[in-house]
Structure formats: structure tokens, C-alpha cells
Image (tube, rainbow, N blue to C red; front, side, top):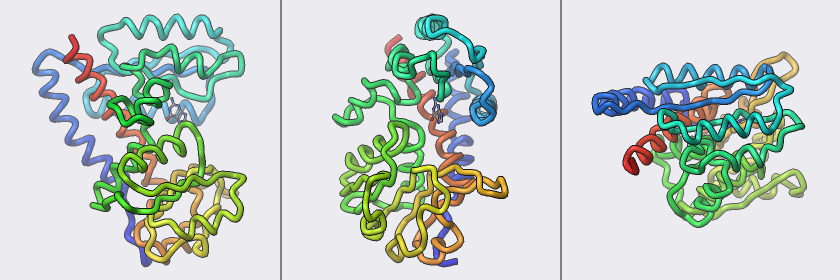
Length: 285
Ligand code: GUN
């Protein structure tokens, strides 16, 4: 294998370990950070993500509440719950697991969360803060990608970063974060033609489309840093990314595995955002 593996699982574990000490000292001052997670329905992937988030909170000592609603819940009921959590002093972060059923407007729900408690960084106020480089909350996956690059000591300024994917959760905020760090950023998407013309120019390539084997060895520059955000099931039911790992790892300089790369970093950044929210709310009193 040519590339060095970026071990997201190990980086995230070290970050959780460091957090435990921070949380202990918060608790010693009589302050417990709290996260509320809302899950609607029984989508197996969402249930598994949410279980992981609650387990992570327990591990580091963050108080967590899981609030579940049936698939048929009304938008009004959900918004009422968010209002209650907005006022709850024991809750510093609120996360509503997406996707939501069709009778509920995701944007209305996101915008109902007080920006100070929006640990997903999805509220337009926090997106606007990212655009204008002000302090706010940044979506967990892009924040986790930056943390991984920091962990391997790779400076971003002046690098050409190519982001494939333009979702609100990953592609757009990742592009803005890299731009704020003085990278030159190209955003590609499903209508980009030919995709490889752009990906081949990347010093850092972020693949965030959700399509198995979208990126092959011929699509990258030798020595590139390849960040795989994809979470796809292949024909054998195995979890795979957007990058054809076996061939790309021979040509890349660094590469993230799936699983064990971006996924654990996303999870740990939710904990970081919750602590940040708790700190900020504690300071405000
Ligand atoms: N569904 C898939 N990813 C996410 C995420 O990062 N946050 C929320 N709230 N829902 C998701």
C-alpha cells in the first residue's frame, strides 16, 4: 500500500479521552453538558446512528436524552417539543435526526432550533456565520474532516481542494471551511463533466456523493490526500465508501478507510459541538 491510512477511529478515540477530563472539571463546578436527540420513526440507519450518538455521550459523561416520536407525528407536535428543549436549561444541544417523514418540513424544524443549541450547524444563522467566517456551529462531518487533517499535520492553506458533492450537510459546508482556511476550492457535483478532469487536480480530494466506487485510481493525482465520506452498502451488504479503496490506496499519499475514517470523526465532533454549546451557554449564564 502506497498511502498512509488516516485512522479516524483512533483520532476520535483520543479526542473522546481528552474530553472526559474536560467534562469532569465542568462537573466539578456543578455544570453538566446536555444533548437532546430527537428521532422520528424507525428508519434502521437513523436508529443505529442515534444509538451511537447516545452511547458516545454516555462514554464521555455528557447527559443525553433520546426523545422518540412515531412516523405519524405532526409537525406541530415536533415543533412544540423543540420549543420546550430550547427553554430547557439542562439541554445545551438539540439534534433532530434526518431524514424526517414527508408531512414535516425539515427546514421548519431546523429553523425552530435556537442557533445557540444547533449542534448540527444546520440552522441558516449558523450557515451564514460560516459563510462570513464568524463564530457559530459547523456541521459535524466537515468539522471532522478538518480535524483529521490537523491530526496528520497537513496544512490546508494554498492547497487545491476538490469537493465532490454539494449537500447542505457535507459538500457545501466542507467547501466553505476549506475556503476559510485559505485553500483553493473546486466544488463538483452530478452535472460536472468530465469529473476526473477536476479530481485529478486535487491535492486534497473529498468524495461526498454516496456512490460506490465513484473515484478510481485514474481519477486522482499521485500522492493526493483522499477523504472518503461515502457510506454505501455494496452488493455483498458490506459498508463501503465512494472511493475504490484497494486501487486508490496504491496511488494516494493519505487515505481514509470506510468504515473507521470520517464516520467516527463525525460522531466525535457532535460531542465537541455539544461541549462548545454548553461552554458558551454557561458563560452567558
Ligand atoms: N442524518 C444523516 N446525517 C445526519 C447528521 O449529521 N445530523 C442529523 N441531524 N441527521 C443526519
